[in-house]
Length: 331
Image 1 (cartoon, one colour):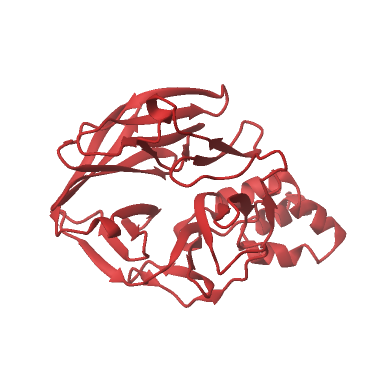
Image 2 (tube, one colour):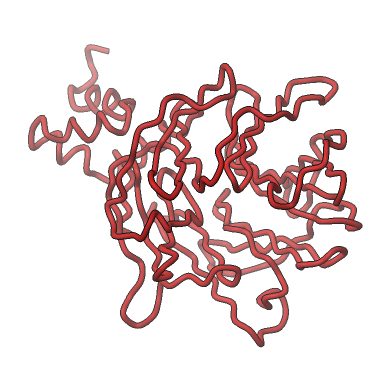
């Protein structure tokens, strides 16, 4: 240890600090400011920040925007802290479209503008331009965030319009993109029972699209696939049913899906509360948040698979799950 240069020791220590402490450390001296602003430092700090204890839930209602930690011991939220949007908005009319490494892709619903925002550092960047790029049309467009081979953050904005055939038709529902292993993945589901369901892949290096099959799930009810990156391996929670919903967990190996587990049918959940799997916690629990903010948890280590229950209620909230990082939105 005595042979290590002081610079290396400081670098190793600082990359393990919480994101907000890194921000404060920039004011220590010019050398630290320069060190903490390098791309190498941001990349390594981010890789060490993507852990369950660093996850936060952002909740938006008509009056406030708050951030809460997740307490994995009792599967609940911790105390909230109020967050002020650093950009102009109307009555918190803000939607979170996608997230990656602490960055949130935000749509201002009253103007359709797109922004990248880091709620930890409060930095943001407008993506909309005077020539009409960067405007999001709900139920038609799809968004995905990714990191290219040069460690640059980029946004893939897929625009769909009426009169277009195939998967770009408005008859198909596109998910937000999930970045995993150099590829952005989108679930594409036809908007009726028994319709076509596929996964569209975008290779971020070749910038080429390809189609792979959906897991072989029954198509005699509503079908929804929610993609999750778990330690750089793509998983999908595929839910099927109408009056009784079942959920299977699949993992992608090559271009084929392998079933990991099945849960027994759960009590009926109304379509207005249809679940989105939002994030993975490393202690073995999956957390499930509905669009209205109801939080569920699934304990993966239970045999037989029995645990799917409500934890907390939040009415009228919108939001997202993110990790606290110092990644800059200035792409």
